[in-house]
Length: 101
Length: 249
Image 1 (cartoon, helix red, strand yellow):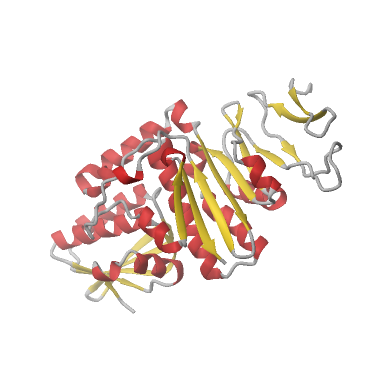
Image 2: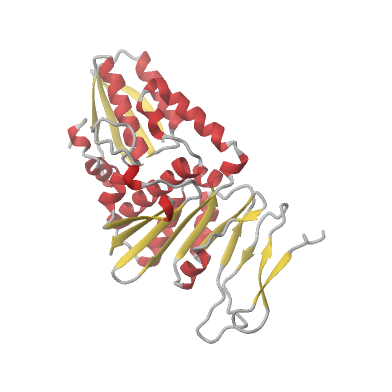
């Protein structure tokens, strides 16, 4: 997986591309550090170009959500489709994190 | 340049001796035996394809090419041909089979290559292919991480412990015994369903003894839930080392 952080108005976008998986621990730790250093309050995980996510990736999403919430921010997911949307639905993530339709 | 000294294995299952396999020396980069008619066979018997991949690991493309061409991919790693007990039966049923070392399975995406070839062979819909790929991926990751590498997911629950989790993976991947452990993935099918199994070489586990964590905010432990939701039947066998999934077509 690769990610790029992009501030757009009041939102901070994290544009994720590729495949978010168990082996992406370095990218996840890098993203976490970037979030800690940011003063953004409204975070959007942009998943339009994310092709695949596994259960470890889902777990990392929850850790990101917790991190943002400890910084008094909010996070949502945008653009999830195909396999990614299916995994989010199967794991009932709509009950855990805002998923924009 | 002299050829490396192979040790031959003779097959006599159809009444005559035929060289059918070789012990692979440590310095052998690879071994490919193409599908061909067995000289001993009756008209209904084909020799079985066996594909060795360069020692030191395979990449995703060579894995996919081997599966596409031969129906199998068996890694030669750490001086051993890693074929397992399920290879012959799978290939006799014209299925797909791969056996990889833990180090290779960790570094590439075996389920992706496996499902690409499976999808091409069977003309699967994108939705079914996605389901099978995620389920097989989860089973492979379980087998590699918890079975072969003996890494617990408990450390993934908090940021403060996540670095420990990463360090443990690195440490165990460097262990010669653990990184060489085999993981098998194989699939067979009929008109109604596709069966895919993943077999690791770890200590196994008792499914009933697993602590079921239903906390919706848990950071790990969703793999089996996803597999259950994506497949129509899940069977755990061989003391927890084998997970078999049925996908209706």
